[in-house]
Length: 325
Image (tube, rainbow, N blue to C red):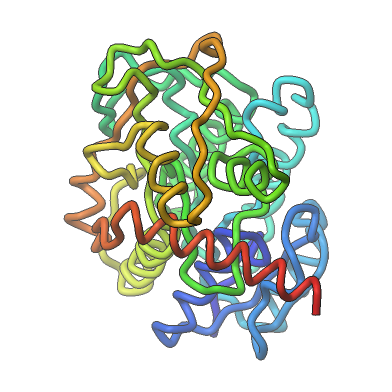
């Protein structure tokens, strides 16, 4: 008996796999390594390289490893780039999810935890986002995540599928020095790479109506997020009720300038970020309320900003040392 983690060789998926292992839940990973890394797969965890668009591969994996539940983390995650690649985004995030659900149904697997996103909200009308905030995705990526939630909802009506969707906000940090964020679009790796290359990081706009003039966003530690996946899986295994969706947010938020200051302190690299114009459509503040997740999924912000930056920087440096050895 095991749980299948799609995308388990990626930054977030690999943390989820480790958290499941720490809780004594066996796992098997399916990942096409388009953005994941074989080195992120823990020793002893079965790994199947391939796409979840391949239903035959999924059926074979589910049967061989006696899969009883799925944590679906795989997907095309670049919201900005999805505007230029809508068809690819829909194939990877919608078609692939439908294929996965078909394979689950044919295999008699009736429980799934879905990796959704804050992108389903678009630019929310208020500063605090709850699960009931209107959904208004503003990119193909956000649209595909919302459609993914609808697919789970409709399959539940048709077959009794038990499911929940976890809406991520800005995931940062590292829970293991061997795992680091390799996205070319996320704030932490962008700033780290700029500093390593001797460039000055950039802030897009410092004239917002916030305490220091820069955008305020929710930043959550990847290890905290991974643990909530474990609790969601445990509740589904136990037949306990779960909400259709949960926000994983801090309820508070941090500004871009606060992040930059913390990175300078942790890395020991003094810098004064350059200020660029605002980006079109960037709201001043988006912060999520995580009360439902705290109630049901043991969701808690267990890490400080310094923890987030220090763990991310340590993992980034370890990766450089490993590459040089």
